[in-house]
Image (tube, rainbow, N blue to C red; front, side):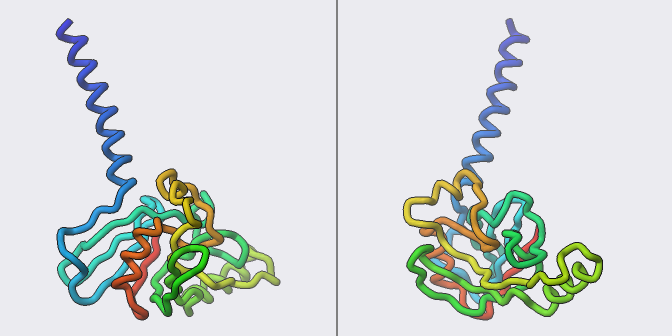
Length: 183
């Protein structure tokens, strides 16, 4: 009987741990300060489906996000629905009629063009392919935030977050803010 109780306890503990991890990633985590202090930077981790904000004090917040397609590969060309990887900067921000807010990033950069041209040279992408653009961080369609909770990649290469979260980010991220996107 004692052995049975230990096994049940271990099983329930692992089930609770799994449920706890899912719940923890499902909701934003924010340091206990009203807003970031000093210079803000953003790190987007495609593997973990997270957008983290850092400031002069270190970590400030982490929000769940989704991307273009399920491969999570680096953007190779226009139309592949991949989210680009590299170091970018916010170039502008605006209210968006479909996705709540839109924070544009400076894709493609010089490094993006170098990767693009190298891939063309190696024959990884068609010779007539174009690099694409119009990448940014934005919210979801109204009442479609469940796509974030369920990690449903749906964009054409952008980073999508819950509208409440994009409103928060929009309130303090400014043009020039560094955005690192990694896999």
